[in-house]
Image 1 (cartoon, one colour):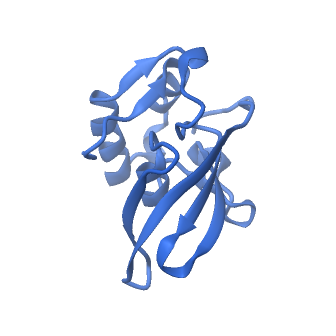
Image 2 (tube, helix red, strand yellow):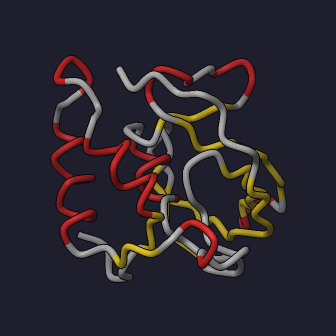
Length: 132
């Protein structure tokens, strides 16, 4: 469980609960733990600076002074080449519910720990999603 209570929209909470068993694994169990303690609010009440589903997120890798952009999506919409990261990917799960200027320590595949800071969050219109 994260040190910070995540905020989810009622719509995102419902859709995340519908993720099909074929996508469920250790990360889904972690997501369920986060959702148990999440603050659930109406979509129109979500703060603009919070990472939610379908958010386009600007991230700074502090040690490299490198900016990257990702979009947090449901597993069926994940696309590496379009920088669409699944909420069930370790980094996607870590980003869910963070706010602008929050930082997390992240271990990259090369084994190095780096600090990621949320620079900006853009709420994208939700597409019609088939949760798989």
